[in-house]
Image (cartoon, rainbow, N blue to C red; front, side):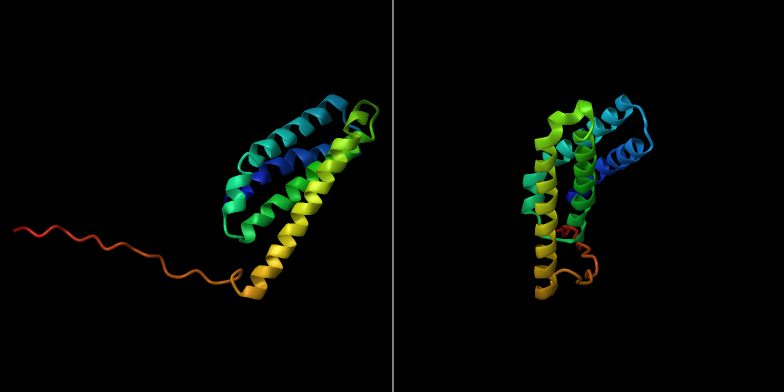
Length: 134
């Protein structure tokens, strides 16, 4: 479930987009953007470990939060105080797009190989043997 760490970035990003839509104050939106960016950066520290995991459906937990953060960053780049985000917002959009493309390809690969939607086996319960009393 390590890839699902990115999910923590989604709520502040979505609320930030909604706040912009409804005309909320700029400091509130910037605070939400900062929270979403912090959560995404924190989850990104685990990127190497996530990449080493075998692909599974939990990996899709990275897609929506990255896309939501990219949308909020793009929307902030359209504001007068956020013009400096023009290039970073496009880089974030490209990153989210590449992650979604990689997830799509991995999903197709897993479905074709028959390794993605496989039922779990029964739990393995270790048998403990007691030392013999000799």
